[in-house]
Length: 193
Ligand code: MN
Image 1 (cartoon, helix red, strand yellow):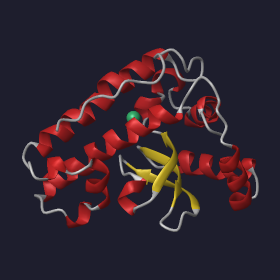
Image 2: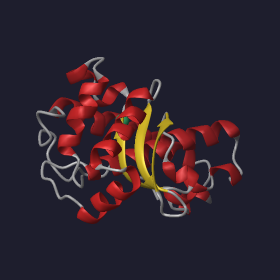
Image 3: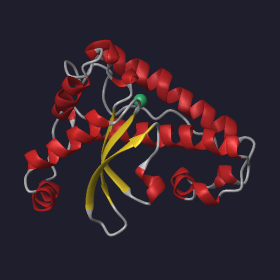
């Protein structure tokens, strides 16, 4: 099975003015597509692995029998495909706040503001390229942390709930070096919070 670029659930300009249409279009059709192409390329060499769902491959990277260089390509580009497919889904021009999750966030982090502060810190302090995450760990506990490059929480057997792309390609056209401003505005287009 070849992986294909998933359609966005909204138009490129739908998240304006917080995320601009040009950034969305390049991010989706160029960056995300490039991860998919490289993922398909490396899986061509391992037809047995190509049948396994991507989530399972990412969960079991350590135990896969592959050339180390190919494994790194799978990690970066399989992670890139999983992360971006997820990222498009959690954003929306319309809020659909998940009240049950909000209550759980308050219980876990003290308040919604405390949670956002923690999440923003993870996003701002991620050195270089990476992601900030709200996840459920293996015991269903909510956690916030950052990952480098395209590493996914799936690689730790965690389930992503929110993920923020802080690679410069996600914000540089509109925000240049102002990552904190991008992060602050991103909350306006997060669907469930
Ligand atoms: Mn990206």
